Amino acid sequence: MNPSPAVINSLISVPQWVTKKELAVIHRVCVRTINTWMAQGLIPYRKLPSGKISFNPLAVEKALSQFDREAIG
Image 1 (tube, rainbow, N blue to C red):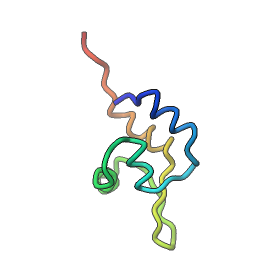
Image 2 (cartoon, rainbow, N blue to C red; image 1 turned 120 degrees about the vertical axis):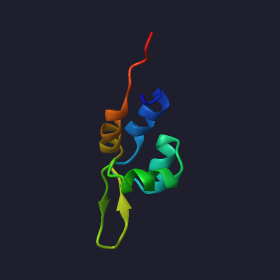
Image 3 (cartoon, rainbow, N blue to C red; image 1 turned 30 degrees about the horizontal axis):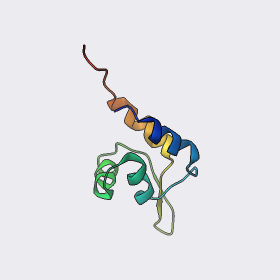
């Protein structure tokens, strides 16, 4: 799953830490997908004592890059 140039540009311009909703927008998925990725341990996140969850978009992109596949042909 190679990110499009628009996603790469958005990663460059986003803050270091983003919310679950912002991460969903960056990856063009719904918040439920982010919840699933978290539950499966596919993406890194931090949970503050207040309960707020934050994501580093670059770290998430790196974690998801393990699922990239080359096109055949």
